[in-house]
View 1 (cartoon, rainbow, N blue to C red):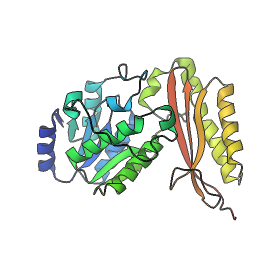
View 2: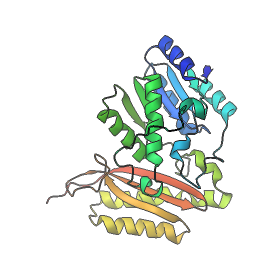
View 3: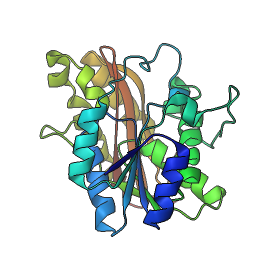
Length: 280
């Protein structure tokens, strides 16, 4: 595996590799990231991965400074998983100008964007820059960050980028907790409580499948259950998979999304669910 640090080196390596798959990451890798690499390998393309803690997607008071930087361990895992090219740029390599042109995507202020202003502009900007640097045939992202995946697919379509965006199912611990680089922030007591987020979403999804139609009541009940157990809830929402907006009564394909804080750690999760068709 090649480890590269400049855009010039990256572009030269990609030219030699030909068509490639891209897996962007912020490092501190877990099995979910490695699943993305393995899925890319199955498509028969050389794999480019990036390790870059992107300052543009962190807001004031968030964990940019303390976000775990585990380069050597990450590089070892990526090499073992079959990554071909690892791009590890500095902040000045990614953003050489003091004033950075930012992409502000649709839905940037919805859901996670409502409590993290500017987050998705930072995500869209860094991913678009990586797309321009690597020009991959496919790019892979985990479904745990469902809104991020939706926004990046939308950006790719609207900007007519010749890139296929693949969403890979969330990888979970045995107790159901979605794997996340931030799970390491949890204390032992918080880690024991953390699977409740997935359990609450499962209960909500089951009610949708059973034909419950009062979406606001379902959302409020789920949020109340988390609050009773010490969570600080940002949102629990039922949205349409096709638009990530409130679903029309006739829309069957929905997604249940939640974000909540357990102690100082913000966790997110989601479940795709198909509910019975309703008539109007």
